[in-house]
Amino acid sequence: MTDWWVHRYWAADPVLLIAWIVWVVVSIVLHELGHGYAAEREGDPTPRRSGHLTLNPAVHIPPFAWVLFAFVGITWGLMPVRPENFRRGRVSEAIVAVAGPLVNIGLALALILLTALWMRFGTGSPQTLAGVYTFLIVGASLNITLALFNMLPLPPLDGSRILGALVPPLEKWLLEPRVQTGAFAVLIIMAMLGLFSGIISLGLNLAQRASMLVAGWLL
Image (cartoon, rainbow, N blue to C red):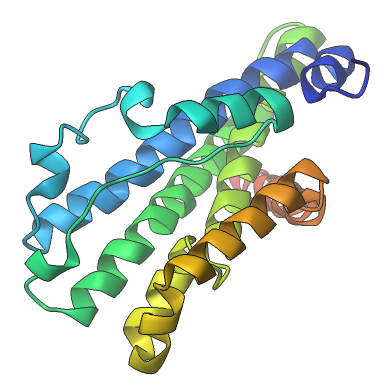
């Protein structure tokens, strides 16, 4: 049990555990809503008709994904769309696919700005200063990580959908059930083996450097 991520995060800092849980759920929900609203703007009413234009995490994160979250600390969400409803074909597909990562980038930038403002103007005890900083920087780094990760060209990640929309000959191959199932299994195995730590470290490093840079500008 000492290797369980919940135990590790709690032992390191209870704020870290709370921040991670909150931001994973919030970031995935907003990511999926980015896809949903983009799909609706491109002519597909499926997200609204299926009840997915909601902030309810239980709608966006399927049951097995919650189980995976409990075990490895990361999960995923779903947004139903029907590409045949898109007004602009492949252009719409690319727009809908990139909308999710763009939401994460926007949220990361907002949190980086808040982190910088807190570093510059925050007041309180050292514990309060450190706790708020941890909460904000975890959110920023996680969203950078999600944006980078989702742009990988592996199905069912958004990067594969963007690649398929931009390179039509690859689309059919990427949509094959065997390819998607195999890639999904590889991603789960990688998550369980902790092989995404490099991307997470990169996201944290970028968020910390950007926050310090903005805080310097505010001086």
